[in-house]
Image 1 (spheres, rainbow, N blue to C red):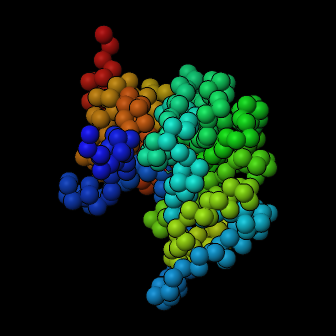
Image 2: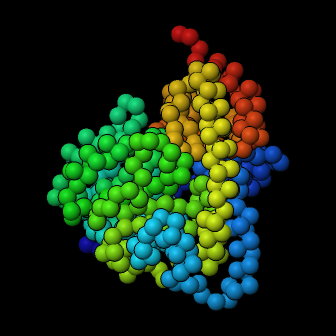
Length: 375
Ligand SMILES: Cc1ncc(COP(=O)(O)O)c(C=O)c1O
């Protein structure tokens, strides 16, 4: 038999579908006012400190980046009381997930995670032929840690936990994390993907991974969400020297680039911008939750910068999505997460949310007529 150019497990993958870009919608519908509430970005934009650092760095981009990223690693190390050798940087936290897969996963290794979780890591794991064990969620949309623990076997190489989770906005508690860790053997790596950490850290029962020191846990965080610089791609990870040391062996040496390192450094030093971001998020989250409730939906309680709710069918989700697009509001239907009967709304600025509410005023009567007419 002829050998194949591309392994079956790669051929079977589907290309990741990102939120619709603003320019694309503007072109398609000839709209000028667009509110993108689809990719969990920071609606306040980047910190001016980040912009200043990046702008200054432009004069040096004929040079390769600092492959040790001293300045940024030292800043992170002092903020989180770590040693720089326990830190890895990458092109977004997904860049680091790519290193993790390259360094630790082999075909037929098992990855245990929850159903309907962030698909970025799952695509990467499948791309090397690993086997995904996705454990159904609980009724309340939370990870079912008891059921997940039962799926951990000799073959489990990685347990992937998005905490808080995207797209549900739920989180596993300290107690649940402790329970799970009791069932994880030393040869299994736990990835704690804390992309939304900053939004959840004030919850008393949120297990901030900085308070634990497990040799087999890698924490991933990002500058893409609360820090508002997703466009430059910079994420960071913490872990034991042994794991981080091996990740560095497979890492592309000059990721993240100079502009990304500088932007992240600037963003980290602008604490007031982070506070403004969290304050806006809290207010918008409370308002949207109440609005959705009042309109007869059941939003999932979220500790992140987005809220997901059930529409009841894929048709209803797509109706909302398409009708809102006509008004210049981009939300996210969740077919890719195998939740086609749900949609997710990222929290925007006050003005963006008002745009959404005004659009809903037009869309909802038709939505109700079509999908909620009493039998
Ligand atoms: C749970 C989760 N992890 C990781 C990422 C990727 O973030 P980054 O931009 O750092 O690659 C996202 C982005 O949406 C996410 O939701």
